[in-house]
Length: 271
Image 1 (tube, one colour):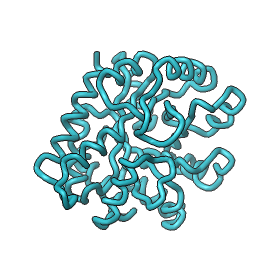
Image 2 (cartoon, helix red, strand yellow):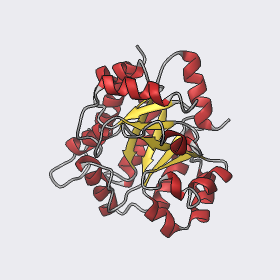
Image 3 (cartoon, one colour):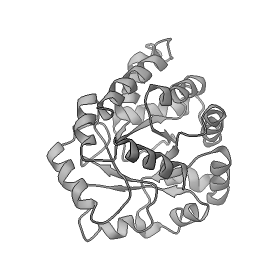
Image 4 (tube, one colour):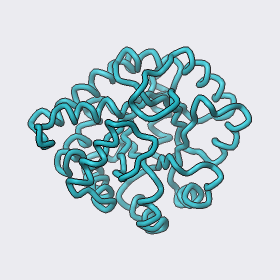
């Protein structure tokens, strides 16, 4: 079993949903970002998504776009993101790490080299939002061959005809995008989430995690009744932004703000 599969199996036995947290690697700078990420498991995160900064994140809303630009301005590179995973692994061998982002930086890095380097530092899987199933040969299949998970997005428009295609080479878990549009701009409709999660279960035995727009413990608690995991990203990135100086520099409150918010939302999936 992969680290991701082991974690979801353990949580199923525990009888609760996972809290999946997303932060942009290198936001607002390398050292602060590493401090934030290292503290996420203690705060209550079960799975961590490291966002790979990119200049044109078409699926992301203003908060994550700004985070990516802050990270790039601070000098974050793909090599530094992989180094960050390696640093995280020195203290934590159990928490699954998913690298999330877009294909362009991976293509430039080189697929084979990227997969080898990502595996060597301890990454477990990938969410590459702009690679549809029709392009599986580009990255998905090589990732699976390398023994790593490829997590696919499903949306409210993933109907019963499309779902088998979407899930064909998916592994680890399914990330269900609860709203139409970009990240962090709308609240999920709980009735729609429940109906679509239950519908998609007909097509996969993988855990289904729900994200986009989750900001509070109450929302997490409600979603966790039907989903196997709750994904929180824009709210955490927003907490980072709110803690910065006017010049965009981190303060003593930056990491603490993120960890306190994670701890608060984590209580929602634990009740």
